[in-house]
Image 1 (tube, rainbow, N blue to C red):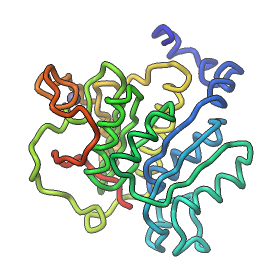
Image 2: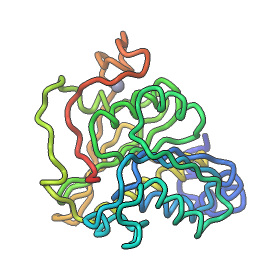
Image 3: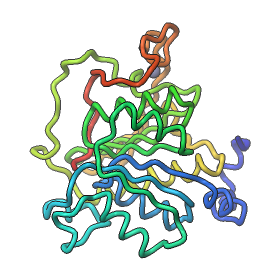
Length: 261
Ligand SMILES: [Zn+2]
């Protein structure tokens, strides 16, 4: 890792060394929706060399309000494939794989090992916890994002930092939120997705994002971000002193804010 003062050196993210590092890097994008669309667009434009895009949904007309990789002609097409098409047209030099499925434990265990950074823009708690567990167990950094109504969330789980299970420790059974009913602000997905891309680019360039152990809350009503610092929970079942989770499997947990599909 670079020293902290490199955070203030813009050349670290825009110079030739950064370009080389990004071109040699790989990103696993879970979800190509309201967060995945802007995150993928920015990371492809930044010159990241290899992507895997996983999404099990198809494009719906209601998605076009916020999922900016898609256009009217994509309605009914698998999102992973439509995103692949769009990014291949704009960035033909990138290696892009698409998976038209919701990732399970076996998928994530294998994919986490083959990518440098995991971005979670999924729309369900089971996948978010799996992504968290895959990151911790594989030692790969995770950029987590979520949006609901006027509020967005962002954090980074990196080796040695607290994880999502430290942040959301309540047991299974917490009331789930229905993103489709609650609604989301399209541009808020653009803000949080772009911040996810920035955090990922920093990780890929060896610059700590400053979001490890920090939940950044983007409140679109107050037009002001807030930082909520959290520490590792020694009783965390994943990264605590006596972990109960030692391999990937579906499991419960509290409900972080979600990203509408
Ligand atoms: Zn933890």
